[in-house]
Length: 412
Length: 139
Image 1 (tube, rainbow over the protein chains, first blue to last red):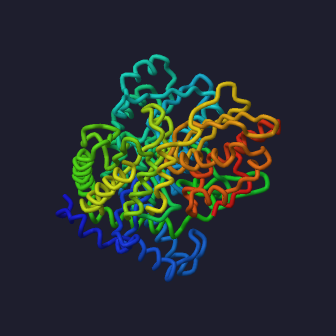
Image 2 (cartoon, rainbow over the protein chains, first blue to last red; image 1 turned 60 degrees about the horizontal axis):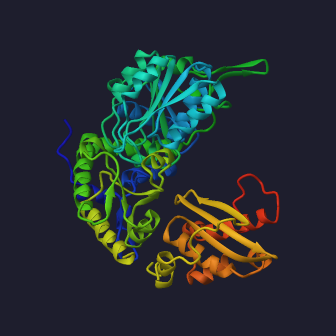
Image 3 (cartoon, rainbow over the protein chains, first blue to last red; image 1 turned 90 degrees about the horizontal axis):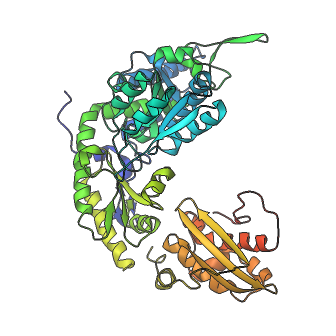
C-alpha cells in the first residue's frame, strides 16, 4: 500500500506556479485536463540534466553521452513500471498521444487492414483518436463503425452486438476517460469484446494514465498511449505501449537515423525494439522530465491521486448545483467520471464564462474540447470545462463558484 | 476585464441591431469560428452598389455577437467599396477596447463574413475555405 495520502494543500507547495498572482487574485488552475502544471522536482530534474549531463543519446561514448543515455533509458523503465508493461521493449517514446496514435494507425493499421475489415471507434473520442482512424479507413478501404453515446455521455455498449454480427472487426480505439465529458469507459469489457472478434484494442490513456493506477495487463490493452505534459512533464514527450509481438511485426513509422541497424545503398535493416520506432534525435530532456514527473506521481501514489480527484469532483458537483442556471454535462454519478466537469450557464456563451472567470484568476477551458461529434450529439455549441488534479483544492472551486455568480450579474 | 463587458457591448449583445434574416437576399453567407463554436448567417441586399439592407443571426459569444451587430450598423447604407475597406481598427474603435489575440477571431467573425459576402456578390472566385481574414494582424 502507498503511504498515507498527503493533502492537496500540502502537495501544492511542490508546484511553483501556484505562487503566481493574476491581477491580484490567487491562481485557481482548473484546466489540468488540457495540460497539467509542473512540480519543482520535474523542473529541477530537467535543469540539472541540461546543466550537468546533456549530450545526445545512444552514440556518444564519452561520459556525458553515457549519462544522458542512462537518464533517457531510465525514463523508459519508469514508464514501464508505471503502466505494468512486461518489458521496456514495449515502451516507445513519442511526442504525445496524438503521435503515438498516428504511429499505430500508420504502421499497424496500414499493414493489417484491408477492404472488408472494420475499425470500431466511439462518438466520445478526442479528435486525436478519431481522425487518424478516419484517415486509415480512407487509405485502406476498411470500414469505420462508431459506438454512440447516450444523453449522459455513456457508451451504448448494446450496439456492439450489431457491429459484431457484421464481422471482420480488426481494431477498436477508445479513450479510458473522456476529455470532454469525463466519462470513464469500461476498457476491459471492450478489450474482451474486440479480442473475441479477433481484433486489437488501442487505448487512449491521455486522460486516465495521469490520474489513476494503470496496468496494461489488467486493462487487456494491446496498445496504450499517453502524453507526458498531462501528468506534469514537459510538452513534447509522450509514450506508446505496444504488446511486444505486435510491435515486433510492425513496419517502421518514421524512418532515418537511430531506427536503423545497418544502411547500405542496396537496402536497410532496422534497429530492434523500441528504437526501431524512434527515428531521429528524440526529445531527450523532455523524456527525462517526463520520467521525473512520473517519479513524483508515484511518490504521491496514483491511488491517492484518484481518491483525491473523486473527492474534489464530488465537491465541485455539489457547489455547481448551488448556482442557478448551471447544467452539468456527462455522467451524473461521480464514480462514473473522472475529474472533468463540463457545464453550461443559461444565456451565456462558454467563452464569455471562461473570460470572466479568467479575469478572477480562475483558469477553465471553453470550447468543443476537440470533440465536435460529442458537442453535436448533445446539441451544444461549446461548454465550459473545469478539470482537476492532485494539487486542486476546494478554495479553487469556491473561487470558480464566486466567479460564476459574477458572470450571472454581468449578464443579468 | 470588466472593460470587455462594458455597457454598450452588452447592450449590443442583448439587443442586437439588424438581427434576423432577409427573404430574397442578394447574397447570403455562413461564417464560423471553430474556437468558440460560433456560427453566423449574414444576409445582404445590395442595390446599385450600396448595402441597402443587412441582417444577421446565429449563435456565439457576446463579443462576436456585439461586434457583428456594430459592424452591421457601420455598413448599412454604405457603398460596397466603403464596406470592403473596413478594418480591424474600425471594429476596435466601435468596441471601444483593444482586442486581445484570443478574442480577435470572435470580434472579427462579422467583418470577415462580410468580406466573403462582398466578394461573392462581386462574383470573385474564392479559394475553398477562404474565410475573409486576409491581412489581419493577429497579434
